[in-house]
Amino acid sequence: MDTVEAVRRFNRFYTKQIGLLREGLLGTPFSLTQARILYEIAHQKRITPTQLGECLNLDAGYLSRQIGKFEEAGLVARQASSRDGRVQHLALTGKGRVAFATLDRRSTSEVQAQLRSLEPAARARLVASMNTIHDLLEPPTEKPKVQLRAHRPGDIGWVISRHGAIYAQEYSWDATFEALVAEIAAKFIRKFDPERERCWIAEADGERVGCIFLVKVSRTTAKLRLLLVEPAARGLGVGGRLVDECIAFAKAAGYRKITLWTQDILHGARRIYQRAGFRLIKEEQHHSFGHDLNGQYWELRIAG
Image 1 (tube, rainbow, N blue to C red):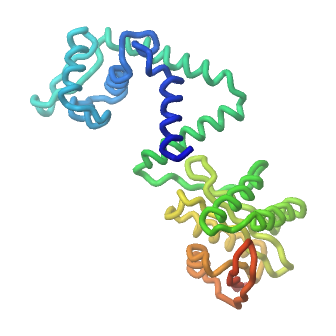
Image 2: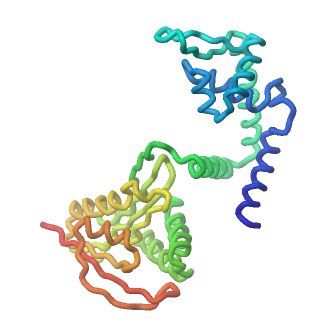
Image 3: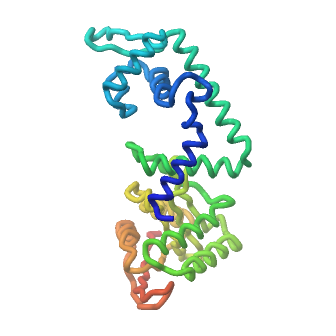
């Protein structure tokens, strides 16, 4: 199934799932478009017909006819602006608020019924997937808030999975790279020293978008490992924040040096290391992950 057909198949499924093919939405006399018009008028204070049309991407003539029908039915009224009498705002009448409350209540009940059939984990997956679709098709205008936290159960599996998937997609690295990540992550968990080691998970609006590890090599040396930033989160400064957090923790833990191993084709990561003060120590060619690569060893000296 190609990409276009997959999207059309989902659209057909979801149209049926939420009842868009019914004559009246949720057993009311309103169509989906009419319900959306009522919703926006109910939730946006002092909205004008022009603003409503822009919000819903509706033809001005069609929208005008729909508003006229609502006015004739006594559901919507126009109110002149106190600042400019030429500007009119739309508002629900008492009858309109009752009609919308019925529609809103039935919509809530239907969604709750759909969710009740799912286990909690499945509900979480469903909501996360819906958020992903929304953000991809209509990216947020404001940058999401990024937060760093310590790892918790479930994060390590995500780290392994996302490394394998992203590096396969972007660099065609084979499954041996995912196996290496799994070995590093498993060793970290088995021998975790919370006083001298740390894993940070970066989240943007509650979704995991990056990670980094700092592991103990010796009393004076730590190693930075498994820096990853999701493609959709690049440009938000996630990688730099993760590396800075590593360095700050290493200083507090008493390390004198941080080392790391990377590949010269990972240009974004190398720029982050350079900005943080790391120096390239040596390079060596090797064949790994199904490719001929040029490995690089970097280090950062930490003042006492």
